[in-house]
Image (cartoon, rainbow, N blue to C red):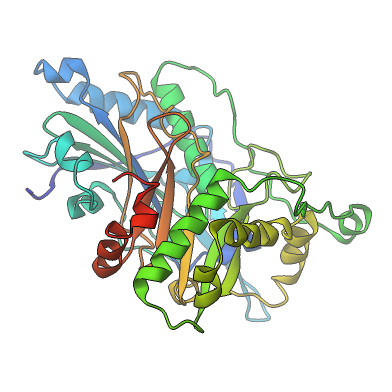
Length: 406
């Protein structure tokens, strides 16, 4: 395939910024992600009809820039930069300086590349990684780099909108909240239907004393969810085709969100609000049990993460801080990111809904499982970052292939 050709690069600022010196403190949820990479997801659209009829592309690019600028009025932290405060005891705190330094906006073209070139191959084409800006950066580099980057890449018959957001600023829920909001403004809305909430939540002793934990653990009272069963199915096939030693410990790290568990946290909270928890089993136990038993263990672990778990984390983390690193995620583990519950295909910028979703190169490793909602209602798309040997084994794994499509 041809290389990506870069046409223009600019900085887009909030349209109605008023200098106020606002700053947003990072929470432990945010700070621990500083050493890893950004969130990168993008949507593939058919080319708008006027462009197919040879009208100028500048009209579309200018429209997307303008609508992005107005959207950033509602998301001032995304036009800011990370900043630090140093204290006399040699400690440092991070915060977001909402100074309207601006978001990166790139216009590019992949000459000769078609929609079919992107969606037909079973393996994700490497050129897709070039459809995203701010590649290779770690979150702590947001001190000198934009916290948001957008890249519009023209294909022969399509348009790919790639979005990169600093993971110390937003989790997956907040990422798609922004994307949904931008498409809403682009499609003609004047005001957002779901404005974000930026007020940070730090529980104090009174809150901790007054509020009792509400347990989620209802083991045995509900059926295993389809997602838990699917993840268990993938886990077993991956381990089976990696030829693990029967007594070797394997892990599946699931991510659990706080918004549905912390009563004080608004649904539209913008930032990171999640914890990861590992389900651990020896290879012989994983493969010797059916999917239902494995999924039950996954459900049991998730059910132990309660309102009190999140509060204890926020209280204990500053005393004993621990950052997330790539090494901490890749120890004989599968790791799930993103969620099929996010509104991805509902993003209409004014010329129709997307036809596919892809992710960038950030935070990729052998064992990374990325979940998307499928184009067909109720379906789930999975992007698996695994060795070619493992993928080939899974392709020949009849038990696994009986329930998936590639």
